[in-house]
Amino acid sequence: MFFPISNSHISPIYLAIVGFLIGILGGFFGVGGSFIAGPALRAMGVDWNFAVGTDLAHIVGKSVVAAKRHRALGNVDLKLGLIMALGTIGGAEGGAQLIQMLKRAGNVNLVVSIVSIVIYVSISAFMLWEGLRTLQTQSKRTEAGRKALKKDESAFQHIAHAIQRLNFPPMIKLPVSGVTISLWIILLVAFVGGLFSGFLGGGAGYIRMPSMVYVLGIPTHLAVGTDLFEIIISASYGTFTHAIKGNVDILIALVMNTGAAIGAQIGAISTQYFAGPKIRLAFVPLPVIGAAIVIYTLMTGHKL
Amino acid sequence: MKSETIKTLRAFLIELAIYAVLVVGYFFLVLHFLGSWLYQLEIHHRYTYAGVAILLIIGQAVVLENVTTLLLRIIRGRSE
Image (tube, rainbow over all chains, first blue to last red; front, side, top):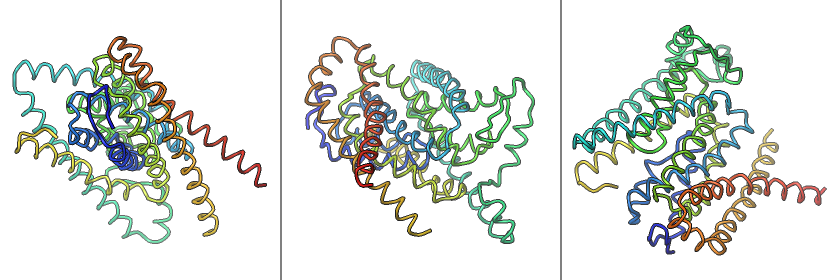
C-alpha cells in the first residue's frame, strides 16, 4: 500500500502485526514500544523523521486503549499521571535542548549511543537482580506470610519508603496508589524520564515505569496503568510538535493502531494474571533489546 | 470458578472481535474519505493537520471502544 504523506510503500499487514506486538508489550508493561516501532518502520524504508513522529502518533492511540482498560481494572492513578505529565513535558524539552547542544559540539551520535547502552543495560541488570531477590524472599516465607504479602512487594521498597518520608512541601496524597510523597520528587522523577525521552527518543517508559515502582513506591500494576495514562498526554504533545514539523504520517499510524489497539487490550488484561515481581522480571529483556539495537547501529553504521 | 473465568474470557474475546472489525473498518473509511484531504492538509496547513491527526488517532481508540460497548449491550439485550 502506498502512503503518500511519507512517500513510502509498506504492507498494511506488516504494520498491523508490528502494531499488535507493540500493543501487547505496551498494555502489559506500560511502555510505548518505540524501540521496536522505530526500527520496524525504518526497515520498510520510512525516513527516520517520519519513523519517529509516526511512531509517537500510534503510541497515543495504543496508550488510550490500554489506559482505558487499565482504568477499568483500577490500575490508573489520574492525579499522579497528570503531575508526571507536567514533569515529562518539561524534561522532554530539556532533552531536546541537550541534543541540540551535542549537535553543535559534533558528537551527538556517539554520546547518545553510549549513554543509552549504559542506561538500558543498568535498568535490565537492576530489575533482574531485584525481581529475583523479591521472588527468593517470597519463596522463603511461610504460607501465611506469603498470603499477606501477595499483592505486590519489592526488595528495594525500603528505599522507596525512605524517599516517601523526605519532607519537601507540598506533600501530595495519592489515595489510589496509597502513597504520600513530595510533589518535587514526583516532578523530578518525571523530569528525568522526560529528559531521557527527549535525549534518546521514544517515550522512555523503560525508565519511567521502573522509577515509579522503585523511587516513588507505586505498586507495579498501578505504575503500568498510570504510565500509560501519562504517555497519552506526553505522546500527544510529541505528536503535535512532530506533525507541525512534517514528521507524522497519520495513515501509517492508523494502520499500526488497528493491530496495536487489539494487542493493548490483551496486554492490559494479562497483567491481572501476574504478580508485580513477575511483571518486573518479564520487563528485563526490553531494555536489552533496545541496547542491542544501539550496539548494532554503532557497529554497522546502519541506523535501524 | 473455572466456568466464571471461561465466561469472562469469552465475553472479552467477543468484545475484541467486534472491536477489531470496527478498528479495521474505521481505517478504510478514513483512507477512502479523508486520504487525499489529509495529504493536502499535511502540505498546506500543518497546524490543522496536527490537530486532525491527534483527533483521528484518539477517535479510533475512544469512539470505537464506546461503539463496541454499545453494540455488545444491544446484542446482550436481544439474547436475554
